[in-house]
Length: 200
Image (cartoon, rainbow, N blue to C red):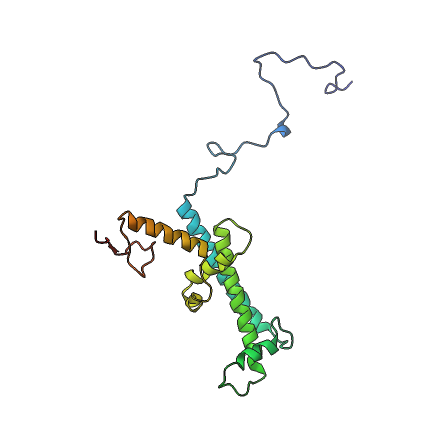
């Protein structure tokens, strides 16, 4: 008879006595003094925002590298994502433009596509900062405000009017209370802003 297979059941455990477990029941212990798990460390909000900004910048760099590779590999100039006739019509809106070469609308179509893609990437980064998965007008406006290259769009894409109205009401209340406010033309978030106190 095999000694490992007995017909009698094992004795009941004794309270306080050590129990032998099979070796496969638990994974082997890590090195002495090292935890078997990776602890989650607290990341301050400022550091998290910096990490998020760095990740967004890296995504933009990868985006432009991919665009560059795609441009170099392009051999088909007949299929476009934007309508060439509409681009040509916009180009002819200028009275000084008489003739347009066939290649010009193709180049403009690609440039417009890249412009829209970059603005979308920057807007998406703002949406993710606000923990949203839907791109909104305010995200595009924030992307325009944050990027110096897009300054020409500041007047075309206005900021959210509700937030501006709330800010104006808060500024009026602060002025009525005699609280100093930023000088005209200086952003409220500028740490080096000069303040003036209204005369009483």
